[in-house]
Image (cartoon, rainbow, N blue to C red; front, top):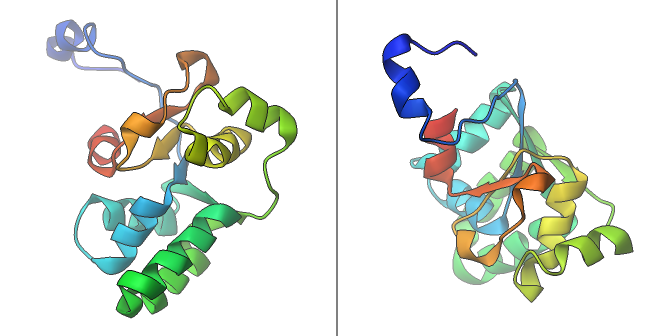
Length: 156
């Protein structure tokens, strides 16, 4: 990617990741819920980008189950939009993470989030999008960056 010469000094101080489209993105449950509950905001915008094919959205079965459980308890009116989003915007990884992936992820995320990180790593996503960034700390060598929806939206 070529940047204008006036940006080169600024970019030399920031981490710039080369992106090719569609960008593989793994969505955590909090982002899926936010995007289902409101048609405004960065979560919904990222899901729209996935529907348009500019990103390749992934979720795990665990994410789907957690979303359905929380939406039924807290925001039942968002269940129908959620199901449409799942159908149109993301690929559901139905296979549970294998023991090797779980072992690798075990020291890179909060205990409850290890299966989510392992699934994100197995999909080879470039980004794990979550509002709980502090719960994940994969090393740069994994190729997975953990960002909030707003941070990712500003990147792409």
